[in-house]
Length: 292
Length: 260
Image (cartoon, rainbow over all chains, first blue to last red; front, top):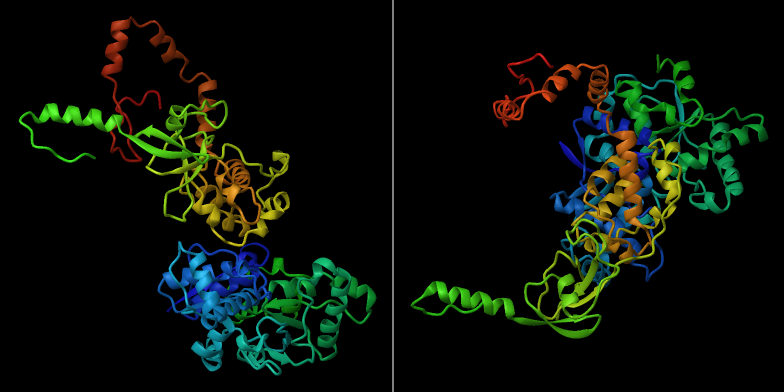
């Protein structure tokens, strides 16, 4: 079965280790991800200003590209793109005045009224494939791999676009269970990584990162699973500094959920592009006999 | 154009009608001033007909140099239209202004240092990420390039796609004049095409081999022989030479394989 797919710019450059294992895995699961043609940037951040409509144009144009293809569903792998696209879609569904203004501005495109549904790949795995069916496809169970589920913000907030319970999400835990891994719960699972504050306040971000990584460590996690390239950046790049500051911290591998999926489905580890991950996730995987 | 009339001598009437059409004057507005110009002229010719003399904003007059970017509107239509003044014929009621030059940021770089990494383009043109996908650039392109798509390709690190999409760019700068994010798309595309040509496009290995063969003297003898052939004989050789048929396949070879 084909599924309209929106990649996002970062997945084509820095985060190929999020995209490529995702595409390969979905092929195994017989849900071929079909990249929509002529997509542009998702808008990167959802604009909160009431009167700022120009920053809604980019996400909506992508939704129009999906509609043009006759698709009623558009899947993303990147949590940030998911957030921007789904919120812009909601705006088009719920606000007639802004919808009209935007449609009138984009007079070279077909009219759009929120017809396409934006979904994250985790939702596809949960709702269209199901955890049990996924578990049956697993060839290499990720046994003894203790992984903390890190959601960050963009899959869960605001409430209107959340893919799971905002307060107590379990989708990643169930995903990890299906792959045979040992999920680790920790209280910072939905704490913000610092997001774009990294640009103006890089110092603060490493403290944010320590709250999250330190907590995961204390709860017995050997690694973190995440869905967002910005979380990956913020939690990964400062780890060397954190190791100097906190002697108990020896670094914590970060995995994109698609990498674990591909690994568990028995795909060649090359497709995971572990070389693009911070630190060395491979040594942990070798330790657990998950990588030769 | 003109209504058909019954005539005993159709040929004569046709000539007459043609003359009438050529002489018909239509109103256009150049920088807001009304002029009557002959129908059928290009915008550039019409501006000259109206008495202006081009010392800038005019180059090849053949639609390839990009010097005569022009914007216009037609009466009762809110749409801004674009054209090259040397290519587009005037229409009644057009409001015309030329934009022969538009200031644009052009990055300085040492080409030898570039490796085709997407981040190099991001560093040279960080304003790339100010694009909001408004698509005004695409609407302003007289070459029909999907300008916004090419900018998206650059953001996605796909330099080859940006080079492919912008292949027809003549650097008129109209996209830049309309850009909400103040990008200089045409300079970015030039960089993309340079990187593509020098770093991404595969080298033609057989060319280097052929040059080597020539330099080693493989064809010296036959060229010497030809130099001493009489004119009539040379013509005959030329006319009777075995040419590669139009529909020849990859494996086609001439009957005479002495020089392969």
